[in-house]
Length: 428
Image (cartoon, rainbow, N blue to C red; front, side, top):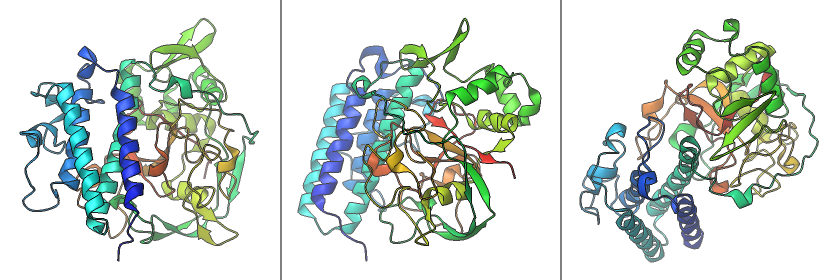
């Protein structure tokens, strides 16, 4: 039987998710509401409406039913259903004015909260409210990506205070492997269908880096000719590099003898101990070949993050069961921090920042777990199996309520617009 959640908690989360979305988009106006047509972003004006529509569809219109109720915004299904509205058409749709779009979102939110208050024992409603909250959280991070891609100002400049270094060693943690259950257990609360359910795997002993690859580490690869040395790249990676004309990570530029990095609309020197970010899977793999290392399989990553050998069980977060605090992880912040900061968040094995700072590429394809069953939001996972690659952890732009050790993010191997880096394992 589903465990009911305090409706007041869900109401607070709904309001918090919307406040974050509004802060990320409040200054967008004029041409910035649509922006250029690119494959890796949505027009913000469309995305704002889509978030509202999604919440209405699942929480008010019973989108899982055979005959959903009509939208309060006439024609909304033809505008905002991402499964049916082709990406390239979203710039040419007859979208409502931004004021009307925001009013629509506010009215949906108000009605959802009122329904929660009327139906405190409706477990089905609570499931879809959580789905809508996490969906809005993910789009909030996507708004961060869009702002970075289009060179818009940093949405949270006042929060960009770097955390203090905690002095973690830049070495490997040795793990014994063995029997391990990969994925979420049925008593884990809300999880997405691609995390279901925990399945037995057996891991060989391995060594994984205590911290993520830094700017300094990756700069050594670049200056060793990393983007010119064919032997360090896979066939697909070399084809991507050639087509992109890449000779360094996406937002790096050289100024004489130093390297700079574009963050939103400003350029600043690379910080040596910050994690490398905005590198794709191909770049991560090339670095690993240069360094005689490899990316962790996602089962190895989850084992390093979750397994508590002294207790013989998995943790929800690397540090335990406590809800994330600023001491544990760099989440909901203004940008990356040094890879050895946030020592309170170390895993039982001794790895740091497995959650927060930057998403981490794994070597694993995004595939279903054994016995996969699709959830009501059918478009979330299944369409992307086999074509995307798994990332684990979280970035500085991820919300605290979204993270856990079993959460699987996924993007195509060429995506370097996201806040992703990586850590490595010793070669097999």
